[in-house]
Picture (cartoon, one colour):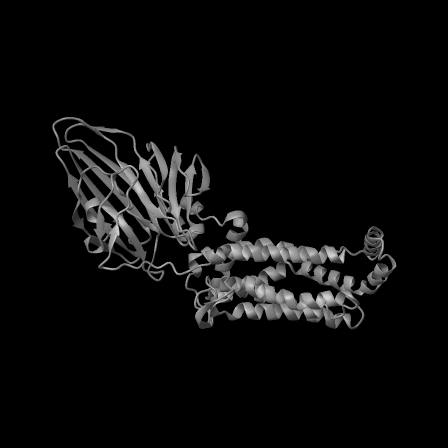
Length: 507
């Protein structure tokens, strides 16, 4: 049984190593927007349009408010990029937003107010006014499109609205890109790399790691299309029904939009239903609960590092009865080791009988050999959910705690002159402290262990902390801080248990 347990631990460790290696390239990096005034950028080609010419940054019109700077392509009346001021000038990974398609019209900026910017274009048949109205209190944006028939004859037309063209990264940011569709009261989170068509939708959104654009869809919308453009880009287009206008008749299309951080309260302040775009994956329910607990503890400590420590203490107290059971189970199994060794010597040539006798020994002493694993198993969903919260919560972006400059990034105490295997280009102190706490915790828990199996335990005592250093080395500092605090609490409890056991009782 002991060999099987050790094998299971080793396999679990290997799974963690493989998972760490597979996700290492996705660990967070700064998501800053860099704009050069002398740079010419290629305007994306929406799949329903002809190729577009290059656009010089100097040709863009900037609109500023307290929340962001929006750069407009004037001739297309489209947003080229958004830069958020409150998040270290980070931007949403989309281009050419709210483009009306290749209709042969060239827009001109008509009016600019404190909270809006308008563009106008016209030909012999129609005049189109496009007004962007920014809410001064939040990240809401209302896009209004007014089409007027200026000819003497009825006209028919359809306006395809391009929500944007989104660049999907192949490296560290690509895993966070997602498309969210609300269709017939169902919320779907989809892959942006696949072509798809949707009907009867209430809203559609694109989100990257921290930010999102959400578009409320008019009821009469014909369909929404997701079209990959090349290898690493995807376009989201909305196709309205065909409209017939009589001479001098106007048609007004209104789109309610949110462009801002993926924060539940911030999004809900604009539209409660839209907060459903925030999804943390498999353990979303646990992640949402942890996020609420974090926010509660933040209001107590006014620091996200303090909030993580308080969260770790809270989870430890919740799991405390199981932790006590785990420690007792480990202690009882250690006390049985001499008898197990005698059985191994007696039945060394009969493995089946050996396993049967060991299980009978556990039964007589009312010990569940897997009972000590339950608290660890319960921690796994919390671990992965908290990982998602810390790596994707915009509230933790740039959050400081002592020497840690950003709790959503690995803590970096020293920068190295080069890049080295496993550790990269920095010295991160939290994973080292965590592994040290793990070493002492294991050492105390196996202090009374004896016999031949002690050699295996000595190897594990050294090997496990080393392995976990590299598993956690490039993980978000907030996650490592949580695990460090949890280890320290377990270490304190182990010390207490060992002192009690010296009196000859287990309590």
